[in-house]
Length: 376
Image (cartoon, rainbow, N blue to C red; front, side, top):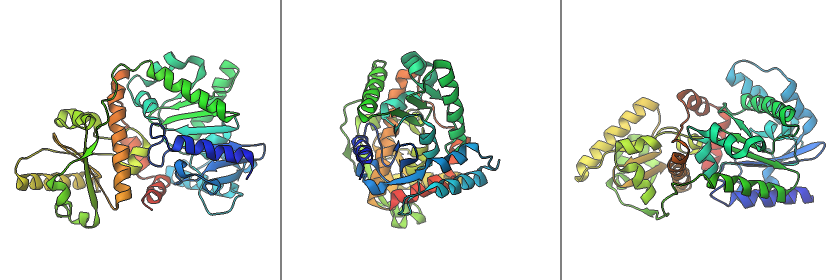
């Protein structure tokens, strides 16, 4: 293994194991030399990264993606781009490169570390994201308004990098993506770490409403015990409930839950889907089960799939999934949604993804592939 790849593995694990930077399977990393780029494979977790977790691609062949004209039909276009990415692969193993490979390619530094830090996304998923971003970072960072992931985002970033470089006579090393995360680039790992430290420090300087102390614990509910009875399709599902001060902040009543009832980022949709169900509390177990069953039936009628997150009024949240690993992923990701929403109040309040943005992710083959990988 060459030294650069070894360093890439090291930095991938460093940020992948830190839950303040990477939640579930989010984020990706890369290293490039003159001819090749090594980028994280889709569906591979950064925290357990080794040399088999990267895909090596020809940079010359990747440049085709930038120059080529693709179909205007979103589904056909993304399939065409996927085929060109596959054609650029030179490594063996059958892994798919990250959908953000082309973005890694056009960033003019050897190392790129893309993460979704909770603190960063508290800003990126807020009403005043762009304004405060420029106040804090000025010409040190590029801000990209929300753009559908994949080829469209790549072309948007490509254009913005070109304009930034002309305007400031330097390439951006920090690229903030609204309702998504941040790309940090440098020619050495120490420089990457230094930039990330600076980002966190600057955003922290704007935080006055801090998160409550983490006191998460399990809670019991007849909904958990009788999950299989609530809907016929729940027959093989696992459920787990947790509560905390932070959770209680959003489950006090229906109004408080409105600030946590849908998705902030594409990753939220991959792991939790886009909509979360509020269930009123009842003292009587029979009434509670009947209420939950009716709410779930209504949810399925509205969205066409079962809810993965149930918020029970005054009690806590329940994650429902096919296996325990997936349940824990849902709890981790949804807990992060709560943190982002809470901290976003420092920046004007939460800004969720729109219905059109959610629909694109829900129907995108790439994210469905990631969802499948996350369950395995």
